[in-house]
Structures are given as structure tokens and as C-alpha cells.
Figure 1 (cartoon, rainbow, N blue to C red):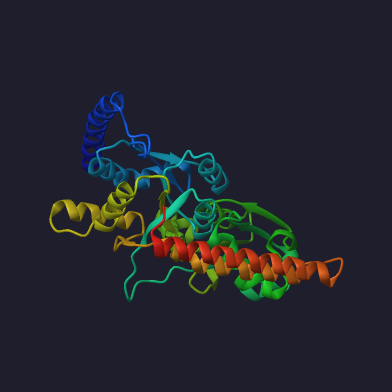
Figure 2: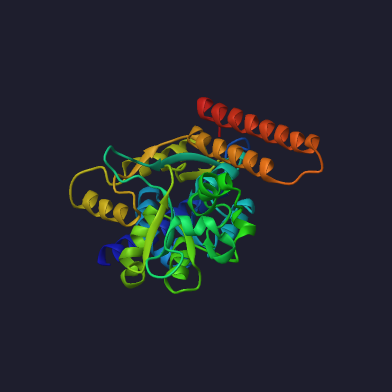
Length: 348
């Protein structure tokens, strides 16, 4: 905690100096063609548990970022994916760590650009979507869930959540002609923490989740976690991405990327402290350089899910279904073109 207070104090002091310098600079005559100077960074925090808890997890890294960049960095913490999505669309977010789905939407809207992702090494546990049920009672097996989904109450993630919705829908339920939104007796939509708690406390019978957040849940709620077990694991999903505002000056984007990639990679007490921060963020090996092409797997996932939905839906005639499939194909081709072009050119 003492380290955090020192970091915050240093960040505030630097922020005051930076604000004064920027104010003096703005009084001068600026080049009309240049990008406006960056005065602060509003970092969008994806909800993990509650908004306050999620903000607390990111505070140490954001304090270090503020010190490194010489600018105030604030956490924009919300209670749901939907609220964060709206904030991005209103240009109230300058930088964020987003699910692959939300990152793809932000990139395709030309608001954000991918700069980094969690670094992975051989032997690391693979991040996967999971399905949870209670150990005691019913349904306690995957077979029971799939045999009679109408009997069970589902706790799932937001439709923008890759592991909380997209992956279970595409890899598990739709192939068995089970639509998550309509086939269950009832549903609760919330964070991964909320879905696990719902099943543990008897408010739902089955929940979507992921291995990373369930590990965090075990640490925070050991009694409740002991009531649960995993009945299904997915193939590895597309990863979350660190994105920054596309309109930022390219040199500022590069500085942010360099800070992220270098965080926790040095030697000495400071680097050791940074590595402890990374562990709490479930990024033990730090962040690796990435670009928009890192979202190609997510684009493919959404295309495949769209086709599954189209084939399972009721249509007036075959021509209507074919028209929908053609739109999906066109949209996917456009996404691939944008992601590959932006990555290869370094476009902002």
C-alpha cells in the first residue's frame, strides 16, 4: 500500500507540472495541422467484479503510467460491458484493456488502435472459457445441462464477452441447436464474478466463466468456489487487447506501447514491484507488442457465429437466408481488409 501511495503522490505532482506546461504551451501559436497535445489519459477499466474492485486492480499500473508519461491517468471504471462500450462511442475513453469483441468494434469504428496484448510463454496455463455447475445437486454434469436446458437457470456474460458468451455459444450450445438467450428457463447477465456467485449461492444452475477469472474467484471467495466445478472447457479464445485512441500522435502511441512492453521487464526493486502488479492483473509475463491484426481471430469467430445463427434461425425462404449469409461474408471480408491494412501500414 505504501508503494501505491508514493506512486499516486508522484503521479499527482507530475500531473500538476504537466498541466502547467501544457497551459503555457497552449498560449503560444500552434501549428494548425499538428495533433493537439495530450493532456491526460482516461483508461477504461473492464469490469471484473465490481467497478471499485476493478479500478483498484489497475490503480498501481496506472499510477506508474502517469509517472512515466508525465500526465494524469485516471481510471474510467464502469459496472458493465455495455457502459464501457457507450463510453468508447462517446469518445470518453482514451485507452483500455478490452475483450477481443469490444476491441474489434472499437477498431472498426476507427476510434481505437491495438498496441499490446498479454505476453504468453510456453507452459503457461491456457486461458479458456468454462461452464460451471454446483458439485452437489443438479445439474452436476454437462450432459444434464445439454439434455434439458429448459430446466435450468443460466448465468452468463454480456454479449460482448468472448468467454462469457461468444465462445460458449459458438463452440458448445449452437452446434447442439441451443440458443443461450432463449432455451434456458431464466438468465442472469453479469460479470464473471457475478455469474460464479449466482451458481454458488443457488440463484442460477449453470454459469459461463473462464479459467483466469475463476482462478481469481477461488482466491477471493474460497467457500463459494468450493461448491462449484468445471463441466466444460473451450478451445483457446481470441485474447483481450490493449487499445489506445487512434487520433493520438503516433509518437505518443509509441511511448505508451513502449511503457507497456517494458513494464516489469527490468531488474531491481522497481521492476520486482512492477511484476507483482502484473501478477494481480493476471499478466505475469507482462505485455507484448501487438497491432490490429491480432483481432483477426475474433473477426473469424464472429463470422462463424453469425453463420451458425443464420443457419439455425427460421427464415421466410431460402433466399432470405442466403442474403443474410452474403452480408456476413461481405462484412467479414471488410474487417479482414481493414485489420490487415492498418497493421501493415501502421495507420493511425
